[in-house]
Length: 66
Image 1 (tube, helix red, strand yellow):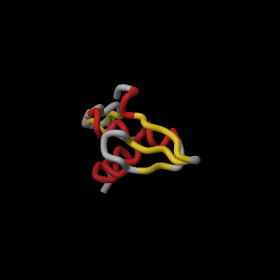
Image 2: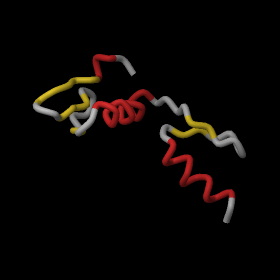
Image 3: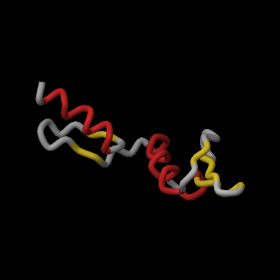
Image 4: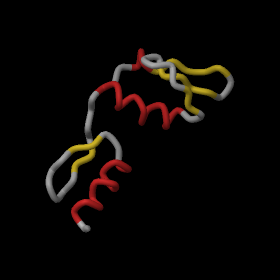
């Protein structure tokens, strides 16, 4: 999403400008911003379903191998 959603710094904490959620690392905040952007960059190679983060893909993959 756009940089205006990244509102940073009060000590070592990072805050999401869109919802106010607090993060301890900038990378965690960047991953979270995907929630607001609607972006789904991670794709299942089996069924082509898309996900916003790799962890959701890994959880989804379990459905293919039950």
